[in-house]
Length: 478
Image 1 (cartoon, rainbow, N blue to C red):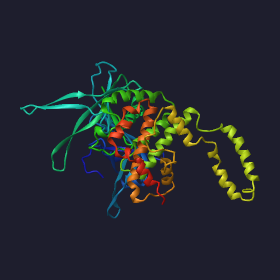
Image 2 (image 1 turned 90 degrees about the horizontal axis):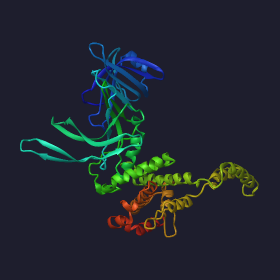
Image 3 (image 1 turned 120 degrees about the horizontal axis):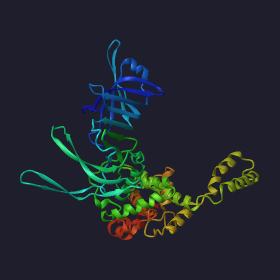
Image 4 (image 1 turned 120 degrees about the vertical axis):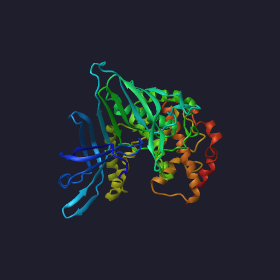
């Protein structure tokens, strides 16, 4: 439970399983840093606790009015998860319970007194709250005067227009906290400023900005997400805290050396990639592939490998479905063919007297109608002109273990010896480079203008040059 000062204290109603319990005392603790958790601390009476029954998931709503009875603030969340509920017993029939909830979609609206004679329907201004991303961070110059005054001058503020027409301008907002020593410290948080003519639910639905941030994260090799928004209207200020998304670990040492796209090419890249992504078919598959390519922090080596291979399979499936390479014959034709195959198996001497064997072979039949991954992958590379001759082979095992072989060993629970760990790290990196080349090609960006190009890898990556040795190490028999 948080030890910070509460931001709001009010009476709320909790709804669970179509039952509503009202007039529950609630304290609201908002994040001091945007990546901090949001907490709701409820103080139900014994009667209210019995009625609630400590639900795992519930919704909440409440209002705050001023002394004149005018509505001042509304607080609501459609989904709140129960975190813990300690109960203190002070004696016979005297106890105190706490219900601690983490809202997924907390909305706080503060109503303002405004001049009704001012211009009607003025533009609505707002900001999206973002986690750090090196590509979007503004570049600023600080100068200090002998008088103690500090002047901040903007050198670079990136702007981008989403497909829904919303223009985003990226900047740092500075916030202040008091540390454990009582000192006030400042820190910067990345935001995207926007201005719209009227409240547009499509703009605030996150889909467009999520796609943009996904592509930006891919180019930066640094996961960036939107954790909510704040909009300013003449009559109110509304804040939305989004927590249905995994918050990435903040790495302070991420630099331009770690990015996939050089910062000087970023603006051209994001315009090209976003335009091509918007007009493509099967967006969900492409999204999955890109998210898996970006990956998650603190994964094991084996987990990273399987996630990257899944990204490769997904991008190939994306190609299969867009080019009719998923099935050999149509599903209607397959149903007829499958019946013929089953009749043949039933009469064959190997299976006619063994129902168990027949069942096992029937379970493998669907694989017969799928175009092999090797064939689909070859077509994919040829279609997008992706040259992988300089990297560890994905399916070719003529000179040693392939990347597909490594995936099969891992997925079936096989392990590699400790002395093979460095070689497995090399396989992970080669698989990453293959996935990144593939996605860049689908997005219409030449990977020769990236950090997975032949020239960049040969100059900067030892594992790029030494993979034949690493392959032989992983090819050693158990």
